[in-house]
Structures are given as C-alpha cells and as structure tokens.
Length: 161
Image (tube, rainbow, N blue to C red):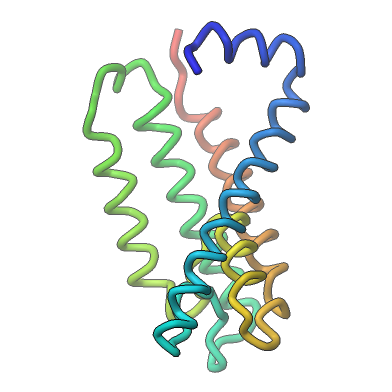
C-alpha cells in the first residue's frame, strides 16, 4: 500500500482501530510463523523456535529480562526509525538487528527471548510443546511494560521542533 492509502485507513479507523489492526496482523503473522516452525521442527524431531523461561530462572528474572531488553529495543526503533535526525538513513535496520542479537544472546537463556507479545504467542501456541503456554503472560506483560517505558523515555528526551 502506498502512503495515501494508509492515511485514508488512519482517518477511517482512528488511532484505536489502527492499533487493533496492527496487533491483529502481528498475531496472525506470528501464528503462521509458528505453524512453519512447528512443522519444520516436527520433521526434524527437534524443538525449535519456542520461547521458554529457563527452569533455573524465577518469573521475576524472566520478566526483568523481557522488560529491560524490550525497553532498549523499542527505544532503538523509536530513535533510529522515527526521528528527523535519521531521515534517509538506511542503516537503522543494522542497529535494530544488532540489538535483537545482543538481547537474544544475553537474555534468551533466562526468559526465552521473545521481546514481543506476538513472538511469544505464535511460537508458543503453535509449538505443540506441553505446558508451553504456562509462561505466555510474561511475553505479554514484560514487552508491554518495556515498550511503554521506552515511549515515555523517548517522549521526555527527544524534542524535535
């Protein structure tokens, strides 16, 4: 879709409708990705792509990891992809990708490294792993708190006139 069509959708649906559509699209995409990951892992007789909280970690540790790394991920996206200072910069994907790599490497063994409710939902529901849904709430609350805090921090620190 081109930009004018998106503007028409925003006008028609309003902010709440756009947000609901975005969340729905993210969840549907994650369910499809989860089906693919499950079908491949079943063929390989291997469990891949399912975020799981470590048995050695408490839920508070897992939640902390999800909040902290989602905060930095959302803050990075907001700074490199939405500010006028970075307009025309084609390297923002590199910054985001490196942060996802660091977050998954540093925190993935503790929390499972979802950092996005859609990732934590689609892969978890479609994995076929028994009891995998037990920790799904961590993948919703942690990223929502982290993203909310990042948006507050961004709004207080970035002033574009």
